[in-house]
Length: 217
Ligand code: 5GP
Image (cartoon, rainbow, N blue to C red):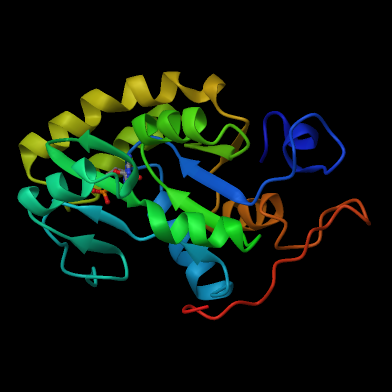
């Protein structure tokens, strides 16, 4: 389900110029990772930025695929040398987007997708005003808190921090170009792909097809 801004965000002839940088954000626990995994499985040609983080790796995560896992000294070095497009501290860990790969994609006119937190989305908005900012919303606040608590990947203190942060993140929805409600991972992935121009849009003639890229192209 899309709540707002659909026409403005995707059409080529509206005020906002066509863009190929899409930012997926939304509260922790809303299911950004599941939507990204769905896109990764279904549309492997969609290029996803791989963030650097100081968080410890979860069992299922692969270094270099889900994140580049680094220590704080390395993260500081990357941030201070301007190699991060944006970065933020989230629930006690540092996260950042490597600048060069994103700029390379955009220069080549190819779609790029970032999955980042609210603070990062705000930084991208300032640096790249043409980026399309997508807010992934839960079906309800109660459902978000249930998912977050039920995930079982966090220790109690981290979970407390993430729950405390959720209200602030939910309140940021109006800052985004468009909201996609994650009532079904498949539908949310479809919407995101549509918005990126990677699936035929409902109105003929409006689609901007994505080139099928390999992971290394
Ligand atoms: P998690 O630890 O659950 O993987 O991620 C925690 C939060 O950090 C999520 O909201 C996620 O989207 C965000 N995040 C992941 N990578 C980045 C990044 O490169 N920059 C920013 N600002 N946030 C990120």
